[in-house]
Length: 323
Picture 1 (cartoon, one colour):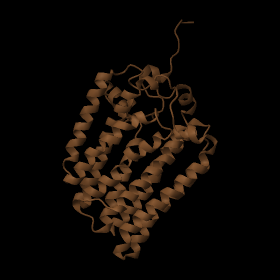
Picture 2: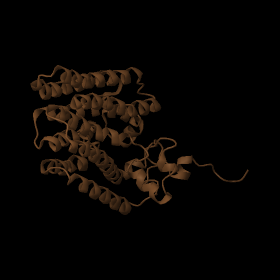
Picture 3: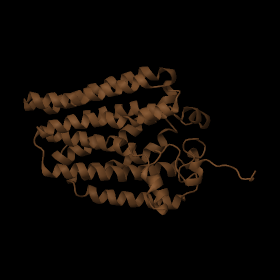
Picture 4: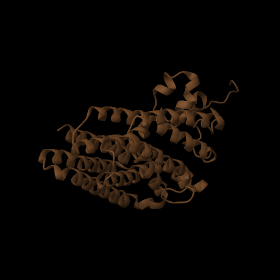
């Protein structure tokens, strides 16, 4: 006997409990940067994808209505970099506001602030730095898109508090995470229209789908500390609600595509565009059929598969834009 107590690997190394094993942050990033990259969820890239994909949907759909321009490639790349930075800033803000809650939940107590890897002051500085770089990218877009980007800060700021006063915090996440469906369209066209609003609504409903699955991981801890979520609200009726969200996502995205592409009178472009919501719907159905709401690992796995759901839509819309 050595008299030493064995400690979990995450506690020894600083690795966050639900991060991908073997991720680059924990294994190749400089040691001094790891707590900050963990604040940004760089070890869990799924959130960046879910923030980015609505941007790509709207850029592609907007380009399909007229023409794909060289600047659209920068819009797509700029949105990708901006999604990484703003997701990082938003997650840092979330961890600052939730630091007391996170310390009481098994999955989140290993995060940098509750585990003592960074101070709140350091986290605030990191949040400001990420936002500043993202703003520099945003200012290369047109003025209408810049205005949309600034407005996006409002739902980002509100979201962390939603679970304290509503059973629908996933709706607030959807409002924040799918803002790119509006911004991308405006960045290409210079104005807003009904088609991107419908696309935005489809994204919000999609977020209710995947984040309800995600929230089932924490439902027991959330009940103990009084945190609200759609997972707790729906309970055993989750499957029925997810079916409704699937249908609404497909219907709203289909309406957005029809409104945008029907005036072109190009059957091939319209057919490719319509494949986007239907491919999403089939993938969401695949997730539902494999879901076990009482298995946290299953919920996390299926939540991560949501990247593929959104990518199918992005690929078909990009095909429509190229044609």
